[in-house]
Length: 506
Image 1 (cartoon, rainbow, N blue to C red):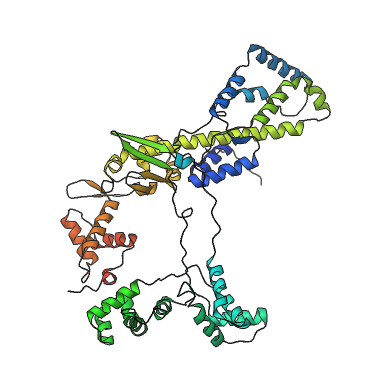
Image 2 (image 1 turned 45 degrees about the vertical axis):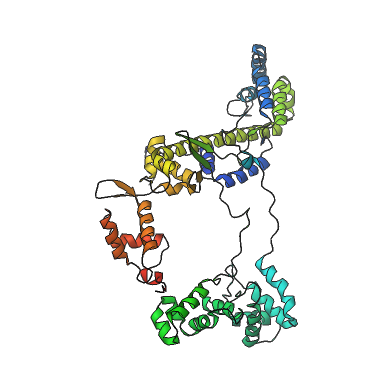
């Protein structure tokens, strides 16, 4: 049986413009640059703007349309209405669109355009990969054809840290299946030892212990503590990882001085030989904001190097103006369908360009609002630096700028600010608060900094446990449980007390 019911509900739907704005809002500076380039490639009406004088001249020309032009446009519209009476085609008011220059022409973010930021990045030079670097060295090993094939298979199996995670058996199987060469694991092991001596030494090892031993064996025999270091790794590796120094001394029958020299030598070795170095173009963060404190005033600027001035293409705008001026003749053209596809294309791309420019402008305004609110709440930090961070959550910023918390979250995600004390991610300024014995609220990041300081000053022969750190914090007025200290220590990537133990000679 069919039942009909009438219901009423409240729903909220985002328009395409709002979705576009939200997506642009969460992009950092470099990602925004790529997004703008992609939009300009797909939309011919959107291009980088001209000089400001040319833009002003263009706007003046558009605004110079007098009453006669408006009357003519009105007459054209009436004629079109008569010519297309009964037609189902959706007409578009070109005159209204062309005369609506607000937010379209002369858009330019009020941002910092220093010489450093205006300078275009130089092209990145091609860099030799680790695999290519290793293959180039195979010629110096005097390998036969089969050994060369094995070496290339080993090099191709090395991971990004420089380790060989595949078993020798799987390498043997691959060579036999793909090349029909009969060999065994001993053949692969023999070639592997040669590959491990290539530069960087220790490459293609199967675990950390083997990696460190290979590097030590490759050192000259006269290196101090070399033999003791090899013995430590070969005979007492487990005790070494647990830092049971007394056990190592007893088993190897060496003095504390000799153990310390061996331990220091091992610490200087490279645990990840395959980890490459970053170039200057790769290893950097591009701040989205700059905050300076000058003459008792905060100066906040938005990085505009990757947000070029955008405008509607002059050529296509001229084409639209011609279409508008020729509307008196459209009656005949519509009878045979001429220009319909062109007009629809221009209409779609024009609207798309306008929405994109408005979204970029709205993004800039929202980001500046959020940054101003952060500086307002964290004024002491931007004045005096670390140690003056106060508790702050996303809702605090949302209340100030009268926007939703999700909007604030999109702004701070992946964005950075350059201050007088360094470059910080915007998320850094958000933290929970702790109440001291005096009733003051302190950011948990400040408590983490205090914990770091306590650990840095501890006796390395007897590192402090988490409970002892909690007791010291309690004396300073911070009532923190041991499990909270443990959580903060782990967030700081500081090992437990046992692993912080060091050999300290009297």
